[in-house]
Length: 320
Image (spheres, rainbow, N blue to C red):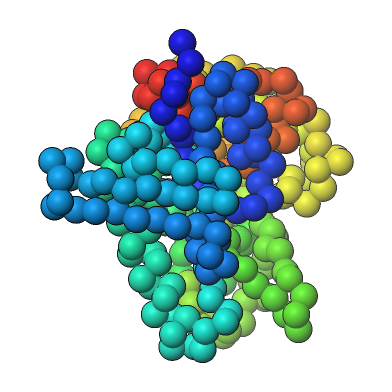
């Protein structure tokens, strides 16, 4: 049966992963309204919502140059990777004011939708986006995590590195960063005690004992579906060179799969990407959860029906 109620897809303009899901929805005859909050600044996105003027708690519409849908008609919302407007045509104070009003107004309207299914709800994603809390949650769920230190104390960082020997450092969260106008990418990197300077005191840093790994694993969970891909590379951070990667679809041990599902349930998420490492003894080590992690290239490399699983979830809800 063709689903006539539309799916809202909130994402940036160039998002191949979202394109894959939209293609699946289109093939099923499910209407899609794609938008990016950044389009508000250019006048290419219009939202209107009425409250207290009719029997329904909220009545209104979302309009783009090519699509319009009634808020009461929305089937689900795919909150992928939206960008917020920067209002470059306004001065500093006005731009900050307009940005704040946009975040509160647009997201508030979407949050008010009754019965709409989210993949994932932004508030749930925000709650899950803290690596220190993720590590504690993972351990409570019985997952194995590498010894990890989060600190801005240089002496404690040196002592941790000395105690564990092979240690890596990585960012606590991805943050746009540039030096002299050149965008910089942060990788997991090895670090030694003599490299720690007093500059560490400026902000918290994450240090983690390196797993003596044979491979990495990217796990995507979409509703009830779990896709696990072993990534063999010989690299400390496999993201550095995609041409060096080899892929194998694998089945996870049942207790591990159950724990990952429980992790998503803890945060109220219906989808998420997990990074794991396999050590020399075949044991799995939990590294992190990314609620909006990339997976499109994995479908291309393995043929796993990941986009179809998202389309099922957005069309049919949590039972998919």
